[in-house]
Image (cartoon, rainbow, N blue to C red):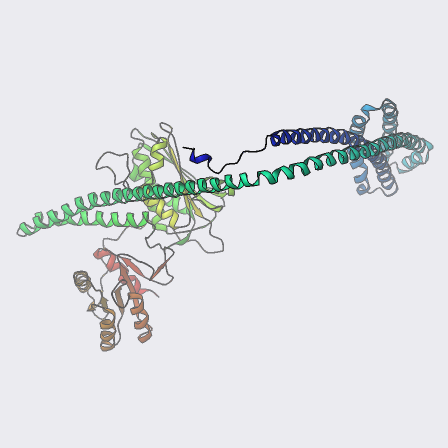
Amino acid sequence: MPDPTTRGAMTLPKSLPRLIAAAAGVLVLLGGLTFWTAMAYEARLDAVRHSLDVQRRLASVLSTMQEAETGQRGFLLTGRPAYLAPYNRAKARLPGEIAQLTTLLSDNPRQRSDADALRPLIVAKFLELDQSVALRRAGQAQIAMAMMRQDTGRQTMEKLRAVIARMGETEARVLETRSRASLAYGYGMFSLLIALVLSVLAFLIVGLFRARQTARALESSNREALAATRRLQDEVAERVNAEDRIRQMQKIEAVGQLTGGIAHDFNNMLAVIIGNLELAQRRADDPARLATALGHALDAAARAAALTKRLLAFSRQQPLEPQVLDLNKTVAGMSELLRRTLGETIRIETVLAGGLWRAFVDPSEIENAIINLAVNARDAMPDGGRLTIETANVHLDDLYADQNPEAKAGQYVMICVSDTGTGMPAEVIAKAFDPFFTTKPVGKGTGLGLSQIHGFIKQSGGHVRIYSKAGEGTTIKLYLPRRHGEDTPAAPALTAVSAIVAQGSPDRLILVVEDEENVRRVSVETLRSLGYTVRHAADGPSALALLDELGTVSLLFTDIVMPGMTGRQLADAAQARQPALRVLYTTGYTRDAVVHNGVIDPGVALLPKPFTVNQLAAKVSAVLNKV
């Protein structure tokens, strides 16, 4: 049975290979001759260009000497130093001109001899020029003018011109000889190429005749090649599908890792909350033990809220309230807090750049990022060490952006946090920003610190980079986009939550709108415990009806994400009825109602869930008392 891979193939004529070989030989010969003749012709052209360069250099030397003489005469006549500018330029340029001319004339003994005669004339001319200029500077103008009127300088210049003219004539004769030789060689080379081209055309005519005989064989080969290409395309498509399946599995694995980490931490926190609340029920008759159980439950709930905030920061979904900041003041204002936090074994140094650009960033988040990095640095220096916080103006160029795809080229304000600790190997750096990845012992870290910082910096339009080696310490650089404009920077915050709860007044009527009944009940009872008069509704339409019934309301405290009518839509409709109505939004997830591109809309007051009594009291008081 014949081989299927050879079916349809056609036997080529035996003379075709010999013809192809002969044509290839002619082409190789043509190429070699063309290359050789082109190189030879180029050498002759180089000789012509060499002569032209000599002529230009001679003209330049003469022009430079004349320029020097013109400047000298202008200075002698007027005494103005400005006339010495061309004189000084000529004097500075002439040694280089002579050196280049000497190099060009190295192939012509006669020209070298004339060049040797030219140098003493130039030296003598400049000696005469320098003497007259020195006399004029010394105030002896008459003597200088008398020296200029003598024939010595003129005679020297005439000799110089004569030598240059003789050299120019010599080089002109050389140029004429070289040009004729080059032209004759060019004609010869053109004739040779014409003959070779005609020979190739003859071979091509024979080759075309032979090609018609092999066209059918090539057509069959093409069909087989197309079939092979289709098979290859099918294999490529299958490989792409396999890679897509692998990437999907990797995504599922990453989501599983993230979900497992969240479930682990939340289950621990919920276990603390549920256990302590049950203990509180059992210890209702013992106020001290009841307070302890409730305190533990509140602490676990606060840690759960902090975990949620870190997850939102990692996913770049947290609502930010950026301000124009002077990061030098921010870092300086945090120094004392960091010293108390890190302890006496850590030596803190700050290097603040002069003329630091302004940044537009959430002040509390950048402070949290610096504290987080400082605490990580302390943990990496168990025996103590040095922590350096540095600020600088930097420009990330296109090359850096190409090498770091997450970065964009532009101007940035940089905060650099460096330590002298244990450092990190490359495999740890590669995973440092992954959520729930930590090298600390169990119970010593959540693994969300760096991922939170990474998410916050990226949400702010910046870039973060880690530089570290095992045993050599770690440097983390935060790049925040430069803020252009004349905005006045905000003062550093660093204000802790006050232990004094802001109390309300019964004459302040607050309308609470929340679709989750248990959340609504807590908000209403908390506000009433603060002294406010409170009414509530479960959705937007009910709230608008109640607003019409109540008349003047001091504050609308509304959830954003509600079925039917969102909190933003409710606030717009309510303020259309009462333009002076103050609005405070709350939500567990902002979406795009009052936050766009990760930034809270201007003029919007937002209290993210979950919140404490202190936070609610402070935010309500701030909104009501805002001028």
